[in-house]
Image 1 (cartoon, helix red, strand yellow):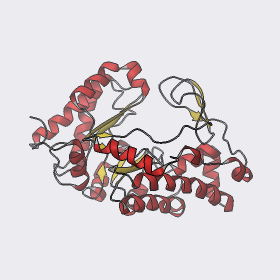
Image 2 (tube, helix red, strand yellow):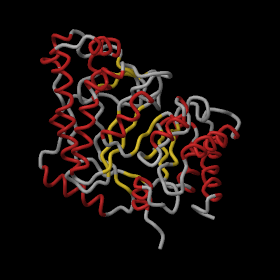
Image 3 (cartoon, rainbow, N blue to C red):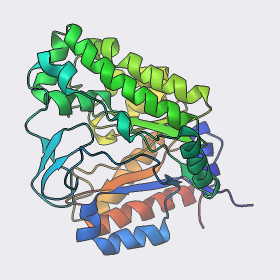
Image 4 (cartoon, one colour):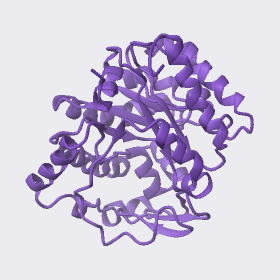
Length: 350
């Protein structure tokens, strides 16, 4: 009997021999605007095994504009993003909290967006989970470091944590408490996993020293993971850049699947430290590989990941993001090459 998408993902996460690798291809609106044929072919030949459900959140009166449209967008926290092109999201150029002394007055987490009737909201989420054969991800995505940056600006944020005081601690705690409320709600539903994110790496190292990360952010992630695991949920985390310095910490706190830029790091080293302990939830390099005009680059990248990380028992996802610059034929070559890898191991479609 064929395994359902939900079972395939669960077996991959627990190293229990899924019948094939689970698939999740992200795409920004840019992809539908510029290479719709590629997107359609991937959807047809390699449908996604992970999904979400309709959000029970309420709209925020603070939101203005569209996040993926050129111009200004104000999010539910009141942060203003400036976007120069359609199809991607912009950046915060004028932080809401320019002066740290103003944080208590200016930072009001969007509790008004959380479901008013929690029981009814849980029931709606559970119905969505029951109606799908796919592995269902939570509709929240805590990102305390990135939210702190959005509120303070990246340069200010980095300076704050190099010389932190009670104001820094208070602002981070306010952010974290809101995210805990979100995780608590979703962990109490029938979703399969809780996800969170923070982009931590530059091309070569963390944006903050590892000792600072361990003091301020590791405990927050540990709380998210503990709450999720207490309700029987898997934990997925995304973080761009070079994460080797905290890779073992993420395994320790309980992250089950990590989405990271593998090609920024030493994959052989990651395999020695994490293979069989954490699932590699992608990704194929979108800086140099996916924009390459020669599809052979895509096939080479798959073989690099497979050489170090692939195991028929599980632990690796077919995953990447279709973002500005992605060359359609190269993206399709990546997908086809993963099929070839699996066939060679007697896994997947014949």
